[in-house]
Image: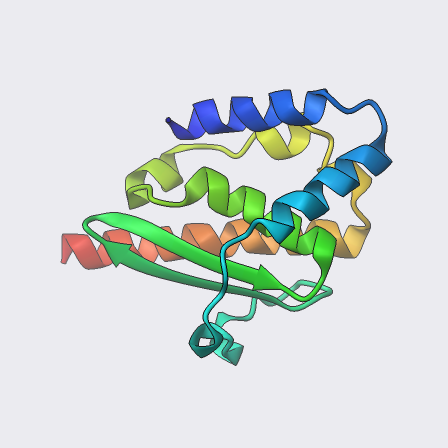
Length: 141
């Protein structure tokens, strides 16, 4: 599936819920399904700055595609980062850099987060793009 197709799938999933409490419950469920984050990556240099809660993000380039691993100590935030990993994981740096993450606004996530959580969301996306830029530069050198 393409990044666009996965975003459309997420929009459809969240569209099934009328109430934001149900959407938060679904986010928590998504976060609970996030694959285990290895303790060895729970380092301060993997912490995302600008997040109210602790969010760890680690990325590796394997066979030209970025593998993201993430975790958070906050259940809603863990769901948010799980969505981002779902959309961007196992993609080339160019795919990540060439696609906008429009699903965040489409599902109403940004407007239903506190300002600090919204800033954290922006910081998570920014960090994932920074990894993509760094891996792209490394590939080109």
